[in-house]
Length: 261
Image (tube, rainbow, N blue to C red):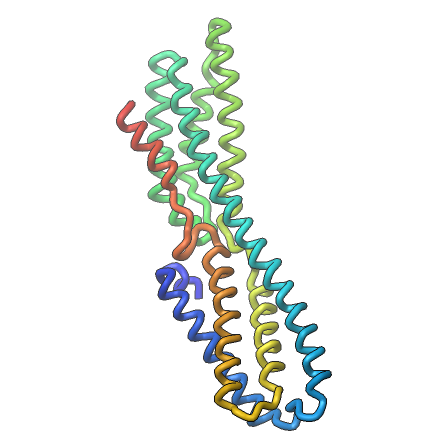
């Protein structure tokens, strides 16, 4: 399933999800009519409608909370990535105040670090894995800065500002790495899937004069549920799928660093 999400475009994934839910809805319809025909609402439809409304409201609230939570988490991670790019830029430009040997070595390490983040760390985040080479390069840069001994108040002010920027950056980096996982765990997906099945099954128990019209209504309901699940799927993991967050901000900083070595 994860491989399908990762390798599919948004339109392809949408079609797959909608077809799956339509098949689920129509399959549930035939199961209900063939195997559970004795449970069909014929005489007490008003009571069935009361329970149907209650079930729909309860399940709808759960879907709404999950969908909004997934979207908010995606936006939060996206903002963190943008702030991380700005923090790297601040660190790179702050090296102007250091002696030439520190500045040149520091910028070289930062360019190497950004290249490793883009080419090695980002692809591994899809699998919720950390990239040790990038972290080691960042630690090497950190040691370079910490070993510098300011000789005047100007250099001391620059050193304090650099340490503050590095502390902020590490916080942003850790937040981004920890966010490289699914917001919704498999048990929650299982619960949502079973909830959708129960909801569709209950709607199939009503008795209508035209089975064709009933199937059409079940199909529309299935498509509506599929659209909601599609949104949850594409925003569930911020670094995977058609809406994955790319390291565009860090790429821009790296291009700037290459032009201003």
